[in-house]
Each structure stands twice: as structure tokens, then as C-alpha cells.
Image 1 (cartoon, rainbow, N blue to C red):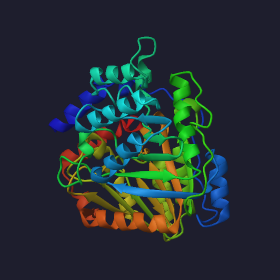
Image 2: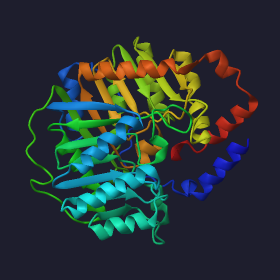
Image 3: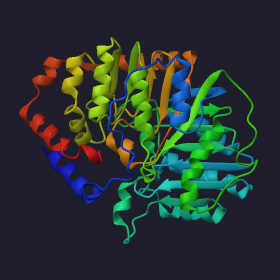
Image 4: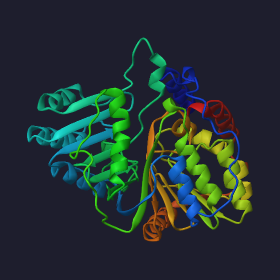
Length: 420
């Protein structure tokens, strides 16, 4: 119970309960019917038009599992930058990882590389002011997204949750990992989180750069363009890819639309990995409709180790109809599970910053990388299946026999679902 009281206090202190104003009027109100499979050319045509940028060929996407692979790759790319670095992240904290990135960005800025850093004011509140000052003195351009402002205090509830790093306009990174020591290591214990980051090479990097430019123009009020930021990009692989972004400011729920369209197109299987899984009614109905079509649906979520028990309770409040429909739900046991992946029919994969909750769909700025590739999907399935071996499946019987205290917590947390 003390976790519940503490987390409710955090909600109140963070202003989440007062930030209930709706952004825009683009809310999807009707269920999307299943009309075609993900392998039907119409699927890629529809997503390319509805989400913005088209799905382009010639890319190579590489999965980086856990901090031991994530940070060396990202830091090597930063240290090798020759012209430009554009970096947008929700979490940038002081500590071992933060210090390494700070020094790398400073060194590149002093070497003449144009370095642009965009951090979320709320998410990156733990960064040392001295580190920011040193970076700015070295020539790094830094912007904070939605700092607390007396004229618009509620805007802090609208956060920049995107995680984008682009080097010389030619190589990009995205995924779930922030710049913080929690992501160090190899998910070997509760102090080291399980997460995956993705490196993108090829023509879709230009789309990732455009996603960064969206918020850079809205904060810095400067347009970065030209060959240094948008070079010609040759084909380097066989993956079809698309990077799209979503923002409540524009009244468009692109992330939610992508999930709903992908689920509606599933014919065989849906695998979901999400650290914060609080699906709305339409998402629940979509997954149940998929089960009714004979689609196998599996979801991996955090287990006993989570950074927010309140969200975990809100998630469990949504499980009953899913479990009854035959959706298999697994709780990851070793540490906090922060992976964000959707795999549909062994060929369509979406990764990036978005969670499956109202905050990602309606309140945050998000960016996701979509990949159409049987080979890439096969690798993600292998990783997913490995994570399943470290997870415990929740049964309908166990869910129904949960304690009265858990039921009360789920009910209370459910009241705040629109803000989670």
C-alpha cells in the first residue's frame, strides 16, 4: 500500500492530474477493420501515406541488446562524427554514461563538428548544470524541451520522449535506452535494465533526421539543412524502413494509428514487448479481434522489478479481457524490462521510443522506426523468445485470485489511465 500512496503523491506533485487538456482533435474513435495482411502491398502504401514519410528500400537495421552493446556503438559513432551530430533524448542524467557522452560531445564540438543537443526538461532533470555549461562553452547548442514556465505550467505534461541520435546525416540510432547508468551492463541484475537500441543505416536516416528537426525548429527556431545534415544516402542493405514521428501538438495520433493498423493487418502472430502497457479500449478490442481471427498474441512486460508500480497496477487493470481471449502475458523476472518492440507476422517490426499507453499515444512526442524485413524480424523473434525464457506467464486463474489490495490498487490507478 505504501507504494500506491507514494506514487499517487508523485502524480500529484508532477502535475499529471491537472494536465488533462486534450491536444488537437485527431483522436481515433472507431475500430480499424482488418482488410489486408502486412505482406499485402496495400499495407505499406497505407502506412506510408497515413504516417507521413514513405517506406523506403535499401536500409540496414542492427539491434544492440543492452548497455554493453548500446553505449560503445553510440559513443564510437559520436567520436567519429566529422560534420554534424543531432541528438534528442528524453533522459540525459549525470553519472558514468552521462559523463562519457558529455566529454565526447565536447571533444567533437571543439574539433569543429556542429553539435545540437535537445533534451526534455522533465526527463533530464537529473543532469548536472555544470555539464551543460561545459558543453555550451565548447560550442554545443543545447535546448530544453518545455521547461517549467509560469505562463504555461501545464505544458510540462507534454514531453519530448523521442530518442534520436544522427551522425553526419548518415547513421542513426533509436530505441528505448536513455543516457543513464541504469542502462549499463547486460541486464545481469535489478540494477541494470534490459533494453534494446537500434542502429539505422541507409536512406531512412534522412527521415530520422527530419524527426529531430521537427522539435529543433520548434525550440531553437532555426532550420538546419544542407548536405551536412541531409546528404545523399545510398542503398546499404535489404531492409525496407520508415521513421515517423507523432506529436499531440499537431492533433495527430500517428503512433496509435500505426499500432492499430498493424494489429488489424496481423494474420498469424503479434509479439509485443513494452515497459509501460496500459492499452486503451480500442487497443484492447483490436488485440481481442486479432485473437478471434486466430492470431497468436504474446506480450512481455516488466515483472517484480519496475520503476513505477503505479503504472504496473494500471496495466493489470486491463488484463482480464485479454487473458480471457487467449492473449499470453509474460512478466520479465531478472530486472526492469524497458524493451519496446512489436513484431507482426514474422516480417513487420516497429521499434523506437513509444510505449503502449495513453502518454505515448496522446501526450508525448514520440518517434518510431518501422522495418519490413523477414531477416530482421527473425532476429527480433529470437531475442523475444530468449526474453520469454526469463519471464513468468500470467494465467487467468492467478489473475482472478490476486489479493484485495491489488484489486484496490488497480482500480485507483485505472482512474488516472489517461495520464499514464
